[in-house]
Length: 229
Image 1 (cartoon, rainbow, N blue to C red):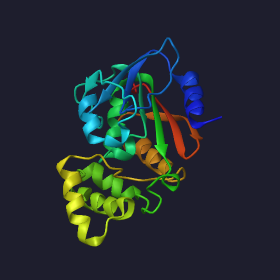
Image 2 (cartoon, helix red, strand yellow):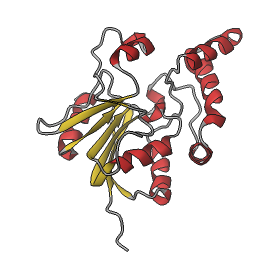
Image 3 (cartoon, rainbow, N blue to C red):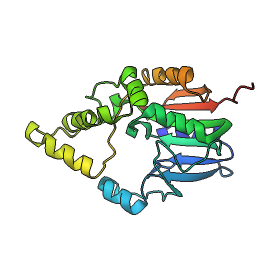
Image 4 (cartoon, rainbow, N blue to C red):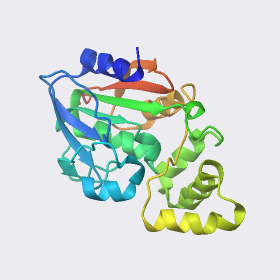
């Protein structure tokens, strides 16, 4: 069984109704026929192809909603039955804020379906793990304080550019607003972020499912009803 089949099996077990998938690109989640998905991305397909020339030979999903996937500012609260984000949260500059918004836009009882890559099985293998303290600071202060550091680390440890080319490569990525992996986790460290969010976020949720899946962690969160006064 491959990782796409595992994703599909979990989707068929949990997903119902109508919802969104953020950043599907070339790999939209397979869902039951009765389930309706609206696709969200920060760019049109033509602009995504300019951003990701490495995906040139693949079919990309056209966005139904063009919006920042972290803020989902055009989407009303309690709108959808589910929100899907596979291999997207590592691209978020403020992952706690992104989770907060995924929870915000789903109805009470709705689900967040996440696929989170384990850095040990990706090109991020040489990067240091993102600490919970770092993520909390990004959430409380905003991510601008850490942005340049992330690009510097990415160029050095993923792109592996020589020292004399680091600054130029960084500037190029910044100029085109290239969406790097800002943060990295393993299957053991990502639940620390979930535990913090359960304690601190205003949208209460329970963890329905955690599953290690061929180099990624699949997470299912269920939004709990707001407590009655």
